[in-house]
Length: 294
Image (cartoon, rainbow, N blue to C red; front, side):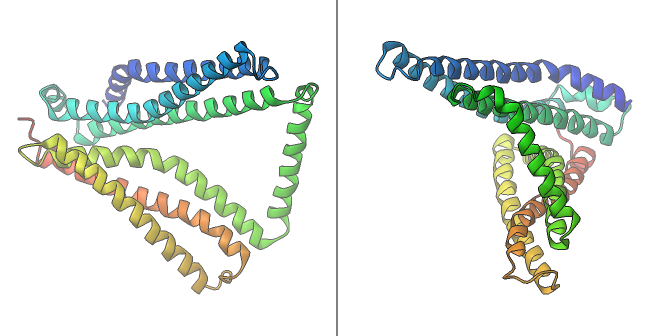
């Protein structure tokens, strides 16, 4: 039954999701085109075409940034509104009468919502990479572009040599490199579903009130988001102090200072994981014991 719920949830959300993906693609093409047109008249600083292309490029950049911000918040707002409407309004009556558990209902929404978040953020990452590459190509001098593959190969070889140096000889650098890689991967995997569960938990807690449920949900989102940031700083501080007291490396060691950035990532994904479990249990408890769609 869980598979059917996931299939239904995906079918219901794919239209808006694909629209947002299409908006990112359109914005990227507009940005690349504006960069290309600006590069054609880059030398003619006082020409009408140069001025026109500059103005067009400026507006294209503003439109691109608006679409980026719009897609980030748009997917979160859409998933939040859909969760509320399908779980706590009249539309949810049919869903809650199905022969499925609350875990299955909640799991399908979390899984599909998380997939869409990953898709949107991956598209934004690819868009940023393509835009940066377009700028590099636009400002490159003649004869430089054909050398880009060689430059990329040289950079890759340099990274490989540094990687071997870091992970092959020095224990401290090996720990540092491992710390960064593992922390970044865990942060990428946990941060998005954690944000989604925070919103779902806040919406569910807002249903405990008889009036102004949407306002309470919004207040809970802001409160929990602020609390998560504070807790992340506290946990990162604890991790750094613990490493220092454990004599793994001295506080005045430069490697210790480089570990600090990874500690912030660690704290973020640790707090995100803990809060995800908490918000999931709170949401499930409200759906099971305190469900009130009146």
